[in-house]
Amino acid sequence: MSVFDELVGQEHLISILQGALTASRTGEESPETSTHGMTHAWIFTGPPGSGRSSAAIAFAAALVCPDGGCATCNACRSVHNGAHPDVEIIRTEGLSIKIDEVRELLTRVSWAPSMGGWRVVVMEDADRLTESAANALLKAIEEPGARTVWLLCAPTLHDLLPTIRSRARHLQLRTPSTQAVTAVLTNRDGISPGMADFAARVSQGHIGRARYLATNESVRNNRATIMKLPTQLGDIASAFKAAQTLVDLATDQAKASAEERDERESEELSAAWGKGATGRGMATGGSKALKDLAAEQKTRATRMVRDSLDGALLDIATFYRDVMMVQAGSSDALINTELAPQINALAHKSNAHQTVAKISAIMEARKNLSHNAAPLLTVEALMCALAQ
Image (tube, rainbow, N blue to C red; front, side):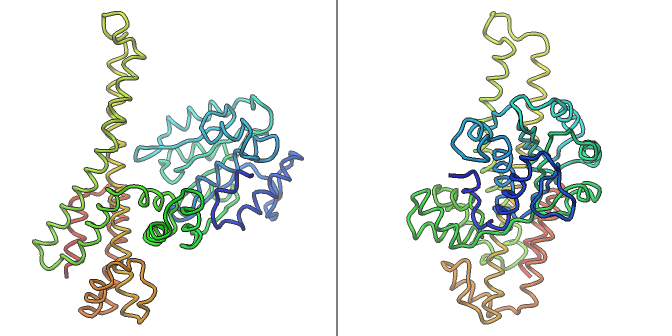
C-alpha cells in the first residue's frame, strides 16, 4: 500500500513526488532545473475534483512517514486525520484567508519538527489568500526553515502571486477519466456499475462529487431539478422564476448542512467557557467568543451558498455543452444522456454561436460570484441571458 494509491489518474505526478521523496532522504534541495529533486515549496494546481489537496496531503504523509508513505503506520494515519504534530493542514470555510491567520501559522511553523524529519504546511485554498496574507506568506517562503516544506493548492497557477509562483515548483494535476472514476466507485465504494457510470459522467471527473451523487438520493433529485431549468426558459418571467429556484436550492442545501454543525459548535464552545458547570453562566470572555463564532459561521454559510451555486452553474454548463456537441454533429459524446431529447430539441432551435454565448455567460456569472457579487441578482441576469 501507498499514500499515493488514492490519486486516480495522476501517475505523472506520483513519479515526480516519489523522486522528491528519494532526494529528501539526503536533506538536499534540488536546483530549479531538476524535475525529481526536493525543494521547500510546491504548488499543486488542477480543476475541481482532480485531487490537488489529496495529492498534497499524501505527499505530506510520505515526508513524515518512516517508510516513505506506507499508508498504514501511525504517522500516515494521523496526517490524514489532521492530528500529526508536524503537519499543518490549513482549510478555510470562509471567503478568504486573512493576514492574522497567516501570522499565527508562521509562528507555529517556525518550531523545529517534533518527531524528526520535516515540518509540512498544506494550504488547501491558497487562492483565497488576501493580498496582505499572501505577502506575509511570501516572506516565509523566501526564507524557509531548514526542514519546512510548503504545499500550496489552487485551481490555477495564476491564482497566486507571481512572486510566490517563482519560488515554488508547480505540479499540474489532470482530470481523471470517466472510466477511472467509475472503476474507483465500483471497486472501492461498492457502488453499482450503472450508478457509478452516471455519477462519474455527470461529475466530470470530480471523484468526491461523484461519490456524493452516487450515495445521496436528495442530491441527485436537486441536480435533476437544476438540469430542467434550461428547458423552462422562455421569457423574462420564467428566467426570474428559474433564478429564484436555483438560489433557493443552494440556500436550502447550505442551511441543511450548516444547522446541525453550527448548533454543535456553539454548544461545545459554551461548555468550554464553563456554561452549566458552575450555575453562574460562562466565564468572562465567553460571550465574545460565541459572537466571534457566530460571525465565522455566517461567513461559512455565505461561502457554502456560493459554492453550491457554482456547482449548479457547472451542471447547467454541461447541458449547453451537450447542445453544442449535437450542433457539431457529435451526439454520441453527451454527458447528460438522460436528457438527450431536450438537448436535441434545443440544438435544433438555436445555432452554435448562440450556444457558445450562453456558455460564456455562465462562466462570467461564476466569475462574478467568486468576486462576491449578489447571488440572486447575478443568477437573474444569467437566466435572462440564457432565455434569449
